[in-house]
Image (cartoon, rainbow, N blue to C red):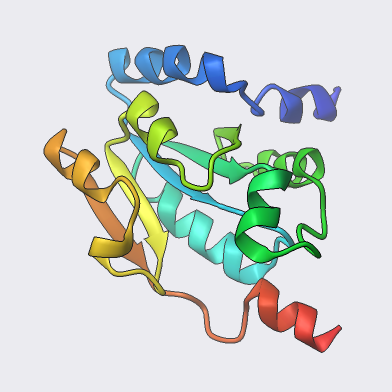
Length: 160
């Protein structure tokens, strides 16, 4: 079995995700969307993503591109390049699709996918979540999943 082919099939080009989303919706499958840099994937990420997946049928991750991470986190980031990060996330059995986006926020991607559920981590408040109003207006839900204490990329980098 060619596992890398299976993994790479889940890394979806930006211009292809809308047709995937339409197919899932036609098949009455709910779409959960989350996004982030996922620079150093750790236990906290896995816990968060599993809980996100449990909210629906298909889990789509919007992944900040290298340039987007650099703008958001500074010149020393990302630690791991976008294709490696996308591959790590796509290798998780409960992740259905990973889409890399260039913008600082996933707003356009959210409007393309029109997820049933938009998920962010516990450090967010509803009014800070990009796309929350759009998802709510289109009949979707916005969920905030608590963080696992002691796990963050920033903390890991400080320890190093």
